[in-house]
Image (cartoon, rainbow, N blue to C red):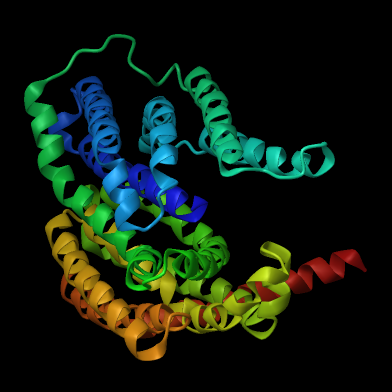
Length: 410
């Protein structure tokens, strides 16, 4: 139940950030809006508030229907609780976007550390207090408190970058929405795609009780894989404004270099980490989730087997948005969401409740990388040989660093 709740709430925030962040950064580095930076920033805040209001209305009206669709009746109450989270996300997300648009990341790191660290501290501290059982409601309340405190910190540390007066230009709002509608759609589709195994598994398995068990297995695996995704997402956040800036000054040549260099470097880092998890999956699952989730071992192994493709898959969307082609990104994501949902549903029928979804996601990942490569070759002259070269070069650089460290240690 908590896995589905967290998936839905995370998806809503992720989609909103896709709508706001890329559009704001794109407009800030656009020569036509250099004298209207305050209006652009205010337009982003207004869209942030309006989107959050729509999500709140959706949860108030449709949470019961969504809970019945996913065969989890308890989800309705949790989605009502999430309204408080959505309200506090407004200042937090706005400060994050403004900081990133200025290529300032220190305060964002501390804010996320506070937001996630307080929640982690609550979970750990519960092991030492008299209440032995943490309910899902306790976790949601802890999320609300940690987000509130992180938002207060973010507002305090970002006040010099925030506008003191809220005024807006209707034309800029409409232009932000015009650009952001494709990014919004892409973010929504890609996040549904990311958690297709959760949703389809919950829906396709007839028994709600059994469905929850299998969803919990996939939730554990997605959290482990999410650890490997952290560097991809961090690089994407840093690289997007640099790509936009490069497009406005140097064209696609520098963007191609950034893509090849970053994907090659990230792939080199992911391969040893995924091999480590691939060979001792049981140990990793016991540490992360406990012995009750050992049935997730084969799911984790298949996921790790193809994880070296994830840097390429992830960076594609950000790169297409940064070069001003979000409509292509949207259409491709629409196509692959349909492929993912159909293949997941059929794979569960063919290969069973446990392994069906992971086989489908692996197939979609491989097919996606092939299609993405040819699209990037046409738009940016990306070369696979360059990516492989940067991957190998990264190991050489790491060996040199390790050698220097060993010499200093001696």
